[in-house]
Length: 137
Ligand code: HEC
Image 1 (cartoon, rainbow, N blue to C red):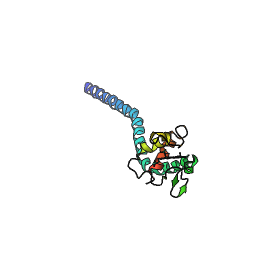
Image 2 (image 1 turned 60 degrees about the vertical axis):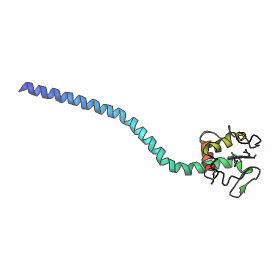
Image 3 (image 1 turned 30 degrees about the horizontal axis):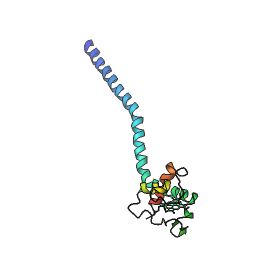
Image 4 (image 1 turned 180 degrees about the vertical axis):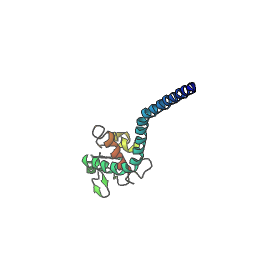
């Protein structure tokens, strides 16, 4: 009888150790997974939001860099550059194309006198400016 009890408790302890280590693994893994899950979630829910935020931020960059001195959007701005009111309507004007037209205007037209903004607008600012331009359809 005593032996059986010992055996049972030995099994119980083994079980506890097993469950315990499983819990430990889960506990270690959980924050990582949680972070990962959260990240994707933020990305997803942000996607809709980002648009509005990015557009507003991009418009600010556009205004701050004097793009309107040469470009017209919805009636406001200069005329030495092409009007941008519907710049994204042209299917050729992809995000990549728009980005290039800011960082390296000469890529599309070697004669371009548009300033090169490669060192002025970059990273998030560049992405936002492109997002803003891509909304002009
Ligand atoms: C000094 C005048 C000038 C300024 C300032 C200027 N651009 Fe331009 N931009 C031009 C000219 C001229 C062109 C047409 C030639 C070419 O393709 O570069 C052009 C072309 C473009 C195009 C391509 C449009 C098309 O339909 O071909 C985009 C997009 C653009 N500019 C965005 C911007 C943005 C964004 C800024 C501000 C960060 C800016 N430009 C500042 C003169 C300017």
